[in-house]
Image (cartoon, rainbow over all chains, first blue to last red; front, top):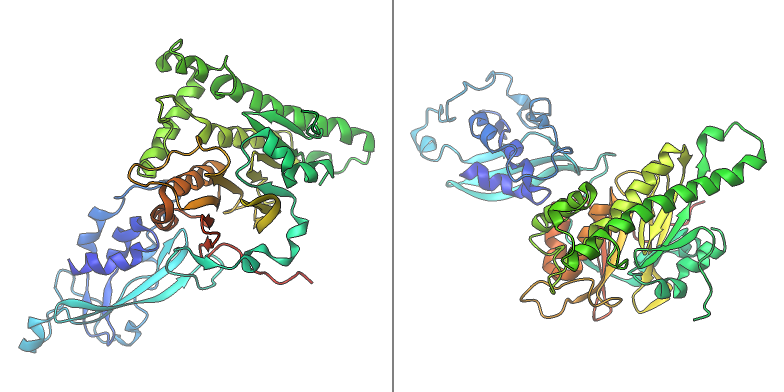
Length: 188
Length: 266
């Protein structure tokens, strides 16, 4: 439940890797507790079908499993199956899920994605994107939502040097009025 | 009309005009004999023309003898149509589902219109024909749907919907994830895009979509025009694309990846 909604942050980038995101071995920021949620993951992978060929390899297994957990050398891994409530403190056990969790770095068609989620009182209080890079390693936007732009922003100074024209040119009459015919005639 | 005819590297097909940049003959790169260049170009242009002629004979509603025109008149059953027509129909239905019906091959009057996928399919197939001929750096523009050869950069101008002799924007195809750009509009041909039921009039007069392949770009540009802002946000989130939309009010909307103001190259 919590994991599913945490993963929905990653869904902004592409819904189908939800399963992959949920497979992340989660580690608290202080490295003391590790949750292995791999059981919940396999079922959801491959749902919400999108183009199968480019489906990302769920590189969670090979990705950086815990960026913040590097200090947890003492607590070797997780006893799988435990829910992380190994803390002796009874009060902590009541809200054992509280903490800040870092998901694996997941490779997607847009690039690498890594999300950190903070859970307090059993509810997600914050989701932060730790790593969002494109295939060239540059950071990318989490949303592909269109925003207003000015004409001068998209026209670009070198517009005169285009080789072809894209427009809603559906008739040959319109073609003859268009820049494309001029480009063709000029042998561009 | 005594208007100028299309130049030699352009021809009329599917109710529009196809422009072809035949590129270069890579396999002949070592050959210095200039006399071979001309026939080679002609062969490339001929191959593209053949592909379009085949698709036109199957699916063009502008050709009364095409399979699709015969289907529209009830003279040919879809089940008896060629495999290419049935495959194109299946592809169109796939995209109808993928766009929640914003793109559809079913016209309001009941006629099956595969133009939304067939033009792009023809361009893609013509491009494969050029690849097989060993051409590189080719580009094909079918009525505003542009595809460039893999690995080849191509600067493309986007027409201003208010003035088709002027440019609105420019995008450089990269030969990879953005090999194709398509533009759809609600102004040019009112019958081309059927607006989604419940939406009075699309607020977007023109939408350009750049993607890895032309079918995706073309279908999604059409779907976004039909579906308006909601479709733009939804499809931009679900597909790997860059989009530029012109609204009825004259404003522009662009996804974060749509190129903006790159500095002049030194």
